[in-house]
Amino acid sequence: MSENKTLIAYATKGGATEEVALKIAEVLRQKHGFEVDLVNLRKNQHPDIFPYKNVVVGSGVRVQRVYKEAVRFLEKNDFEGKNVAFFILSLEAGNPKSYDGAVAKYIERLLEKYPHVKPVATEAFGGRMKILGFTVADARDFGKVETWADNLGEKLRSKA
Ligand SMILES: Cc1cc2nc3c(=O)[nH]c(=O)nc-3n(C[C@H](O)[C@H](O)[C@H](O)COP(=O)(O)O)c2cc1C
Image 1: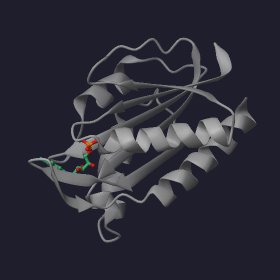
Image 2: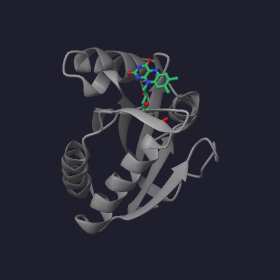
Image 3: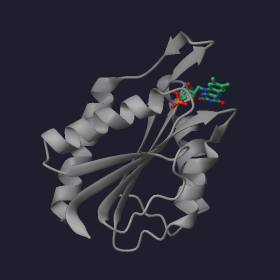
Image 4: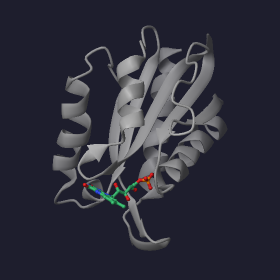
């Protein structure tokens, strides 16, 4: 396992979470010098996390649920000795009035079920809604993503 190696494992249905995962990867690589790999959990549900010191897990939300591939990934892996971070994208998280509820539902209550997962950082970002290929709402804030990724990079470096 290399201290420098970081895996970003994400579950996406509409592509929005993938774009956010790519932004996080860019910040961790360019500002913090991490070696980052990405994996789409809907294409590969069982990536080997052994080589990675840091694992960032991301998912979209539909019908009040974090995607099952991300939930299973959290459930099935033993992250002992690794640093884990977790983020979700949802339209509720992009609205200041429903942000706290989104954090409670999609992060806090979910992670309560998996006490072996002790993330060093979590965040709920606004999502993007596409219907029949057309964007009908985009609540993503890439500035917020960049700041979160930068702070995460600092934290991970201080733990290396
Ligand atoms: C069918 C559908 C259901 C959704 N349900 C919710 C929901 O219950 N709560 C929410 O906050 N956002 C909801 N969203 C918004 C998604 O969370 C948002 O589009 C997110 O960016 C999806 O990520 P993805 O593009 O990576 O799949 C829904 C979107 C779709 C298309």
